[in-house]
Image (tube, rainbow, N blue to C red; front, top):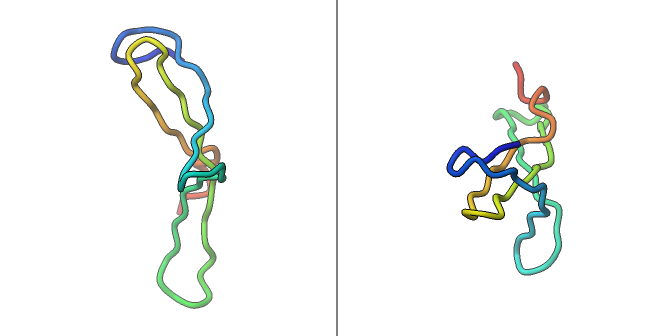
Length: 65
């Protein structure tokens, strides 16, 4: 993947939160007790030249419908 800002090859990196290693994820849930939660991990890419970061959901198909 190329950086949109400076056209350098971006590097897949790990994203950490809350001061310690943890798996970050995106979730969506409709209102209602019986509705299921939709959840997916996050891929993080960083540009080693300009520092731009891009985040992508690993399984976007889970959020359809």
